[in-house]
Length: 274
Image (cartoon, rainbow, N blue to C red; front, top):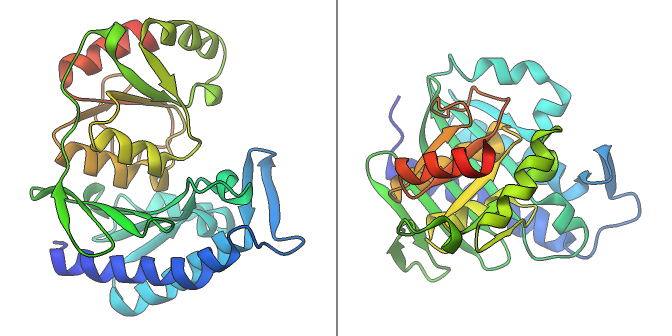
């Protein structure tokens, strides 16, 4: 099933409206009990996550009545939703607040993400910054672009390849199992610098904008990666799993590397993740 530029704009409006009504009024203003742990102190959910997702879900049901809606908080209640992505003619995969810990801590590094998937293939991606009120958008075969609050657009382009010692990157190494975790942390010292913002939305924005060379993520939930991988690809980049196989939204285990090109991916895979 096709997903048009007009469809992308319609979904953008839904996401921005949810951010304005449910997320930003709660930023640094969560009520007592408004923050809860899921699996631990670094895996949180807030009232803003849940209310924003329900608003996006209900609006998508009207705007895209035949689409499967898969949200992070919906899957927390019904994990079987993940198994339906591969066969859905159209699936809208949403992270209502990516970077929930940052949001809960009052840090303005969080985003709203949506990946649009047709029969397992990602065809569009949206990353919205509710603080700056701007977008990174991508449409399969039509490129990737940034869009400011006043509607101005600019093409996105990944960084040029460079020597490993001159590369900067982003990595969620802390999610890796041992001994991979210790090995990867040591290998990251081969690069110029490596950061982590605990927010895939911001990290994919940075790599699609050419501001860092690579990302090395481990946890593969589709709401964290479907949109960002598509936008990065449309900006000229290359991504694949650590075992060399292509990424798609039906893969939920293992790590992923995004880089400017295939050769840089192989370099990062061999020297950092290997």
